[in-house]
Length: 411
Ligand SMILES: [Zn+2]
Image (cartoon, rainbow, N blue to C red):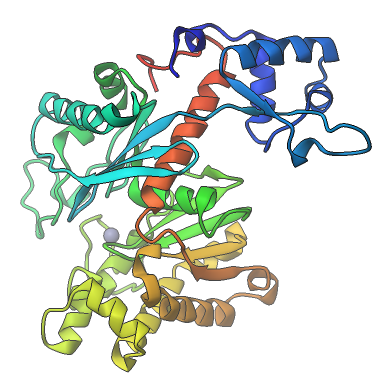
C-alpha cells in the first residue's frame, strides 16, 4: 500500500482535491469542481491520476445519487488496506492492537516494554512489537503510541513541578515519566521504524475513538471524561482533537475544586485528583468503604446489581467531577459529554451525578442542548482513536505542500 507512487509529489490541483475530501464523506466530480472552483476537466484528470495511484477510490453508492438519471460515482480518500499499530502504554497494562484505518480491530496482545530503558532500547522494543503484529497482515502504515500522561506534540511530556531534579519531593509520583518521553521522540521513532509514529495522550485517543467509531459520532463538540485509572478529558471539535495552545487541554485531574484542599504534585492546590482522600484510585476509594480490597470488575458488577453504596459513591463522584465542568461547558458549549466507556454499567450513576450538578448550576440555554451519556467502546476506544488519528495524519500529509512521503519525515 505504501508504494513508491504515494511518495510522489502531489500537484497543487491534486492537493486541493484531497483537502476538500478530507472533511467530506465523499463527493462526485461535479461537486468537487464546485467546491474547489477548478474546471471540471482539471478535476477529472486529477481524480483519475489519484485513483490510479491508490490515493482515491470511487463507488456508485447512495452518496452520489442526487437528482434524476444514473448516479455519479462518489470519490473518497482510499484508506483500505491501511493499518495502524496502536501501542497502549497504560499505568497497569501494556497492549498492542493492530487496527485498520477504518477502526476495524484485527488483533490485540499484551506486551511488556521496560519504559525505564533509554530511548534506543525502547525504540528497538517498539520496532519488534510493530514487526510482530505486522507480519500476519502485511506492513502497518503507521504507529500511534498512547501514553497515560499529558503530552505536548513537538515538546514531550511536561515535567512535574514538585519533582524537579535536585529537589526533595514531598510525594513521589506513582508513575514517574520515562526520560525518553520528556522530549517528543516521535520524529526519531519515525526514522527508526520507517513508518509515521505519533504519540498521544490516552484520554485524547479515547475521545477521538468515540468520535470516529463510537458514541460521539455525529457530535459537533464532544468531551470525553476519563475516570479510570485517573481523571482526564479529551475534547473533539468537528472530528478533530482540540489540544489547546500548549497541547495539554483537558487536564481535568488538575483543576482545583477545593481552595483549601491538599497540595498536588502538579503545583496546584485542591485538584480534583486530590479531592478523593481515601486512595489514589477509584477502586481504592470504594475499597475503604467496604473495608476490603475490591476489583474494578467487582465495582462494575455491584453497580449493575444496584448496590446502594457503590452507586451512591459513583453518583457523588459525578457531582464532584461536574464542579470544574460548570464554567467549562458554559464557555465551550459542547453538545455531548461522554463518560469513561471503561466503567461499563458503573458509568450510569456517574452520568446521573454529572447531569444533576450541571443542570442545577448552569443556565438552561447551556444545558438544554447538552447530552450526557456513557461511552460505548468499552475496551477499544484507544485503538479506535489511534485509527482515526493515523487516518487524519495520512490525509493531512497528502494535502500539504511538499513531498507526500509516507515515512522518514518530521511529524
Ligand atoms: Zn494537580
